[in-house]
Length: 115
Image (cartoon, rainbow, N blue to C red):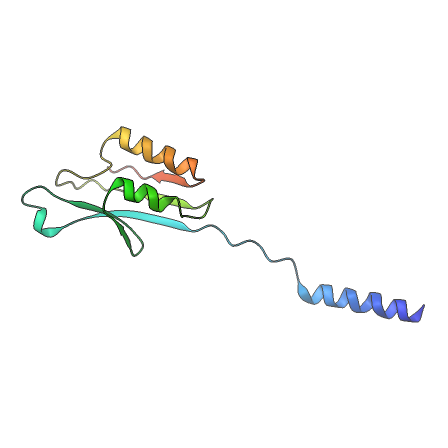
């Protein structure tokens, strides 16, 4: 009986020291921007999408990259209000298509309107 009490006390002490179960890491938040190649500004601007340290040459490449984001991630797009022309995702239909693509892959897409 004494042995059982010691075992129960030891188990209780070990459980208390271990603390609460570890929480799952929160899915990452990504911020997207665009960049224009400087040598194309005067003629026909060429744009790339940039997320962190990764650049995507096209909307299709961006969509492919998004498929590798962890589910539950957030992608924020804040295009700003300064334009030079030809920026990607300036059409509502393109934004809706990207939003649907993100949703299909469990990614939350947030657009911060420019003003």
